Image (tube, rainbow, N blue to C red):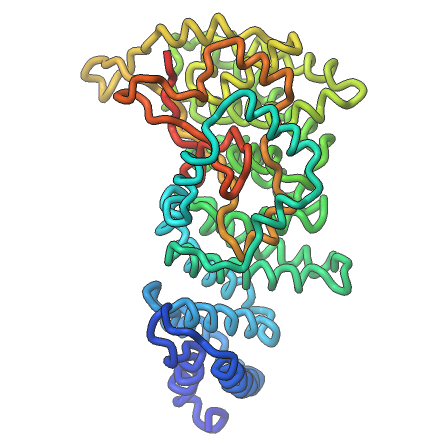
Length: 494
């Protein structure tokens, strides 16, 4: 009928796509038996056979199908089984419509981002009971930190096994997102790996398509927690993919025609990937730190003489690059100093000039990063930040607003580290084995214990809420202070 009368093509495709959302489940509390699932799989198989025949027979059908897939995507309030079925069938379409894969991945990513921003990290932790575990099990203590750090240094993978489970998420949007992420990461794994080996051509093609999706949807989205881990997992398939992604981000950072907010976001992705990814070798880390430090020094050469006070609004990308350097160095310093010429290489970065410049990055960057970076650089005689930090604590810089005068406000960088710890259960099995927790060395802990400890809560409850360390999803990750996709603002305790 469709071949003879294309007038009915839209109605036919619409009817077929509607079958991807089974009406048999009315709520999330309703259990779906294996018999129902098998029956639905038979229906889906028949629908795909008819859909493939139409796509093969009518060339214009693909242009009509894509808008229908967008319009008929189940509403966020629909049960998780309905969402799962629709996403699974969308991914199945890509097997016989390869030219439409990029648009289908974009459609799925767009829906997952909407779910992601509705499931903030703090809400997920509250729903999963992480905050109760935080209060009952661990309050940050130096002795406990040292014991747990030793455990992390000697871990054999058992921690990951405990964190990965098939238990549904308590948070509703997070549960739907978890299912969609699991389907998407499984699909990527099946495309990239064949018989246990990476299919390089298929991986390159998928990476190019996902990079377009990242540029259009993921990078501009604020407050996403988990969807960006699709690129994190894709980068783990091959080292050239990871290096290509970093190079793509760094070109955005260097381009002065790119909006400042996107340049800062790109720096956050670079810093977070270098710090958190287990698959990024030290050689890549040192090469990237060389590039970033060289850019910072050139920036100082061209602007520092004209600067009077630190100003986030005018020098936002500079401060983000500095914070990324501090952040990556804190995470990877132990591996760097274990190399033969690690200390000599670290001296060549000239941290002292960066921290003493008139732009004063230690004033703008997050206190938790500054404090830890100061401890490590002091211990290895690379830079001395304590005097500057103490001066910054006593100094409140005047900031002019709209040319109507000045007001004294605290100007702290709005950081963006998108690869904060992964909280989803079922899809976590793809991410957790590739993910690096913060591992502070014992000497560093002793250095921190000699100074005022910014991690410990002040006794006065009126100014700062107590900070503690969660064992729920990421044990002893002492540099995780994030509300997705970056850090939570940490007040400096004086």
